[in-house]
Length: 192
Image: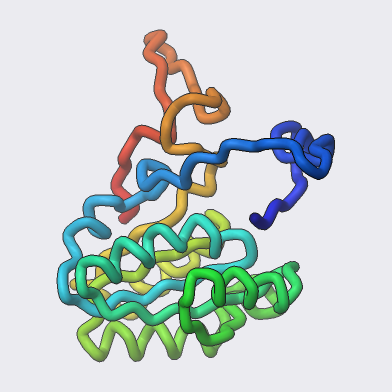
């Protein structure tokens, strides 16, 4: 298991001692945006772009796509993670990958990432799944729009809020002005 200690929930794991038992469930696909595009893929070509911790929730998407006989091409930007940690995770799931820096020094989609996306679209690819920050998701969506993409669908990890996909923890809960309770992890919104 790989943990990134960032907040109240993940910092609680620091108190675990050797021999403690922990039950983990998930990740659940409800936490993905554009789930309908992902589920529609069958014997297609799919591109997966991940950065840092976004790799881990993307593993279930990759596994799902592969189970439906899709050809998956995985690119990983190690971000702030040690290459050895990411390689360990990828080897664990037996996922071949190629390294790719997604953002350049100015925070824009990198030229190599643009080439990968443009080639994928030109070669008749079907779906791009982005497992990265909301900012990277927007960068990829904007570039697809810029190059005039009309057929490639987009799915992504729901990184606007960390979501379990079950509505259990309540971290994703929001109450609307009309007092309706929304669990973002259970809501499917159009990604593009």
